[in-house]
Structures are given as structure tokens and as C-alpha cells.
Length: 184
Ligand code: IMP
Ligand code: MG
Image (tube, rainbow, N blue to C red):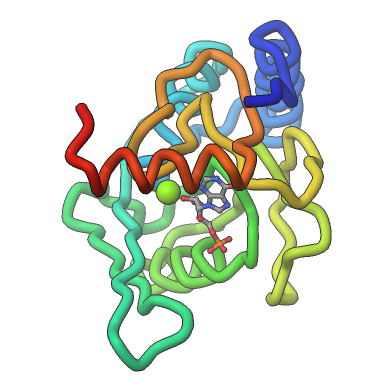
């Protein structure tokens, strides 16, 4: 694994984002909604940097890969959401890749009639987007590599790493082979 961003760099980035948010909302109450599961680490670090009236919620988005669909259908579960009607909402996700997740969750939020919906992503993978939408706040622009750590997973592993690392193709293959032989 190759470290792309260290713990210190991530902390600085989160603090910079927090400053931008506080300045942007100018003391108005905000509802932050993290998209599960990848956003849990940045969510926990970010909210503790926000000195402003704040409510916190989560929404679950996961893709269901059917046999016929190339791109998995996205299932959004908003049951865990606080009431956002007439509120300023900031969606938080770990990474902006094709962009489909964020676009669909933003659309889902709009159905609940908030006052405003904006979005924040900690990482934006360069050159991968398939949508017009751009997140309002971006932490880091990163190259088109598969990354893990600081909330991001490969098959639900590595989320707890304090840094961001890129996972080489060989490592992914090895991991799959280990899984097949029942290792660990
Ligand atoms: P999008 O809908 O293509 O923008 O994908 C967003 C979701 O895909 C993220 O919330 C992540 O869960 C996952 N994802 C995209 N790229 C990576 C990566 O490099 N590592 C781990 N997860 C990723
Ligand atoms: Mg994920």
C-alpha cells in the first residue's frame, strides 16, 4: 500500500473544510447528513471542528448489483434521517467518483423539502465523473486510483486506517485469493 495522504494532511484538510462551512453558513443552524458507511470517519472529525448550531444525521446509500445492470442500482434508506423540512442541509460523503451516489442522494433529500441542500466530499477522484453535478465543498483532489483508509473500504476492510492509501491491483488480487482459500 502506498500512502497518498498522511494523518496530518487529512487533519489540515478537515480543518480547512470546517472553516469554509462556518464562514459560508454565517451562524445559521445547519443539519449535516453523512452518507453511510464511508463518511463516518470524516463526519466524526468534521463535526467536532464546527463551532455553530448543528444537528447531525445519517442516510444509507448502497448499490445493489443486479445480474443485468452494469452499474448497481442505488438503494437509499432515509429512515435514520432527522426531519430536514425547511432546514439547511449539508450532505457529507467520503469520495466523489462517478458522482452518481451524490446526485441520487441530493435528489432524495430534495423530496423532503429542506430549505437548501449542499454537498461536501472529502476526496474528488480526478477524471472519473459521469454527472454534471459538482460538490460545493471539496477536501482533496486525488488521482484515479483505488484508495482505502479514513473511512474508505475495500470489501469493508481498511476503513479504520488513519491515513489514505492507494491499493495496488496485485494486493486486491491477493486479498481475493486469500478469501477463496478461506484464509483468516
Ligand atoms: P460514485 O457514486 O461513483 O461517486 O461512488 C461513490 C462511492 O463509491 C463512495 O461513497 C465509495 O463508497 C465508493 N468508492 C468510489 N471510489 C472508491 C475508492 O477508490 N475506494 C473505496 N471506495 C470507493
Ligand atoms: Mg463504499
